[in-house]
Length: 610
Image (cartoon, rainbow, N blue to C red; front, top):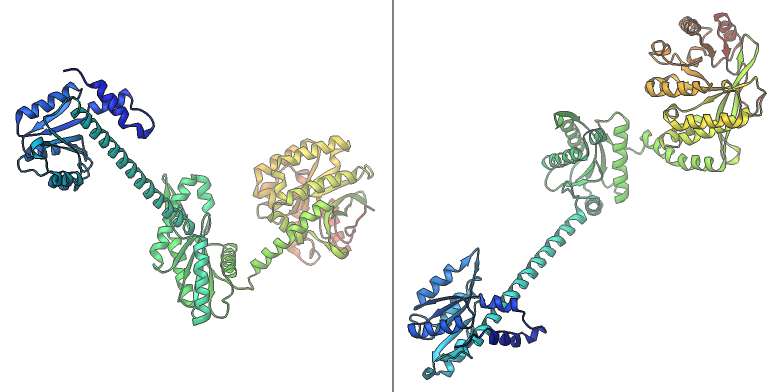
């Protein structure tokens, strides 16, 4: 009997025309490697069937003579919830077996329900009704004894192709189910992320706003009281910068869990921002809310966070906003007021609870800053700043030795704004360095047109001496104008000099290296004046005006001023007394040996140099 592999290839190709491409040799080889169970009571017929299939190229054939044997082989074929049996070829008269009942059993298990069955019957046992019943119960095809080399391999190959198609369809179904499940998970996660914070799992601002809308409606209609707690962790940035974001995230998760344990399950817990949290508590009272907030502050005050053997003490500033029928405004205002209360708590020293009040002075200051910031930007852009000059008089030469340059700002309607109105805002808003650099450039323009025996003192903010660009600007201006560097006197307050001593001293030394001079302003106002003086490279000491205004009548001020002048002279430094407004004060200072005086007695600040 000839080998039928080519015939099987042709049959397989024909059966696969629906897919548009013929089966490859590899696909045919896969069919020939299929595991087939042959069941029959007559040994000769069973062996004949096996021989036909072996000649056709099928290799993995098993046989059995009864129903129990079929079930045993099916069970043995299961590995990791998958059965490697690909086809059953069973005699209709196999003992204790009805194919339709076997099919019912197999359909109950995912491992077996895709396995096709070929039923074998004697030609003399033709039963049209039984054939329809068997085919209706999952029998792939019916064959009759005796088999031929043309019919059996073709039927087996077709059945195996059906099995492959079923397996592929099943896998695709599982993949689609997995994909659908993943999509549902993604949808659930997306829906969760819309209203929740990814890191802590707490609700987010959007969720809080929705809850507040319901709360406000409830407060208006039922005269109830609610409260919003706005919680800001103190010094969180220190830990985050020192230990990294991983440590910061760990702390935030711990804080979130602490809040979950502290508040009730019905309270709305929210992470607002980096280290800011908010909690909405409904159906409470002002007294209860204040106690709850204070207890929470105490809880955080005792909180210790450890990371890599470093311990950090945690505290929190808590702003409290009460929502009742008298102030049930809008969601935006409630959140703004609670945030403002937290801001006030931080400004008043942190680690405290503050109940919102529209009269909080800190918010007036903040609003003032917000109003002033665009004015300052506009003034820089439109050249609305200008300088005035106050003379500093030399007692020895009996003439003005130099002028202090003071900045002013033009306002609408010829209004003049003084530094105390805009400088603090400029420092808070990060605009002060632009103003400082404008002053330096303006003074160089002015001094270039003045008599060469006049010097000019420039008042700058303390932080500008930490900016390397200051040195570059002064160096370039000196090269550009060719003026004598000693005509430039920079003034720095004692407070700023001490707060950033090393960095400021370096900048002062560098600028003095260019030939500029330095004056230490408000000398004597600090507690460490004398100890820092011997290490700080300045040329002039300006005695704080607080010691001068009542010098005539205060013996203590007199002794202090005398000692300041004596120490300055012993260190080779000049002295200037500020706020000199009376001749009697001038006379006293002259008797003490002061070098220069400044004040209304000598001259008020003016737009021009006299």
